[in-house]
Structure formats: structure tokens, C-alpha cells
Length: 165
Image (cartoon, rainbow, N blue to C red; front, side, top):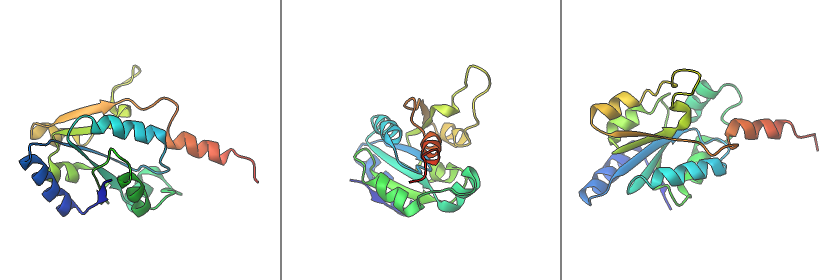
């Protein structure tokens, strides 16, 4: 089981991991309304290295990026749920709108994001602000496709469509 750590604690843990010959995988996101699509993504991310650290967007950044009414679940609770998952080594709550600060501080060997950052057939890829710092220090960016039919937005829509009890 993982733990919720500060950025400073995560930096020390990453250093210790590397001293023992391990490699760090980092991903980040909102993880509002945890579902099996998240678990699938985290399992595949964890398989890319020795440890998986997950940056969890704080409530303020989630509100700014996802809009009114979000997050549905407070950051401390989202981080606690994620830390309890087998693939997750540690969670770090961060308040910035991007994870570039986490990337620069932790310098993961592998930085993972979802397939929505890959170029779709109809146009350019969604910009990935963390790509530049990862490439600058020689890390690797991996984009993982999402499990089809599983998204937080779709889950929220299904819940909202339920008849009143």
C-alpha cells in the first residue's frame, strides 16, 4: 500500500529508490470518482518502472480545470483512495494547474499520461506541458490509451441521468 507524501518526502523517496537501482514512474491527474479505468491505467503505468508516484490535483486546480461543481471528492480523499491501490507507491497532492513542478523536482525516468494527449486522426495532439521538462533531462514520456467506455465524465453523466429516488 502506498502513502500520501509531501513533495519533499517524495524527492527523498525517489532518491532512495534510485540509490537502490530502481526507476521512478510518475503520472498525475484529478482521479475524481475513482473507477476501473483509473485502475487499469495505473496498473499499466506501474509496469513501466520500479515505483509509481501519482500527483493528485488539489481541489483548487481541479475546480479551475474541470469547472464548477468539481471536484466531487476532496483531494485528501482522492489521494487516500489512490494510495490504497496496489500499483501506487506514493501520492503527492499539488495545487498547480500542471505537474511540471513535480516533474522537475522528481525527475522520473518515465512520465505517463493518458492517450488523450496523443494526436487523434482528425488533428493535432492535446498539448502536454510536462513533455518539455521530461525531454530536457532525458526522461521518457509514455502515453497510455484509456480503457474504452470508462471515464469520469461518462460516469457523472450516467449518475446525473438517473431518475430521482
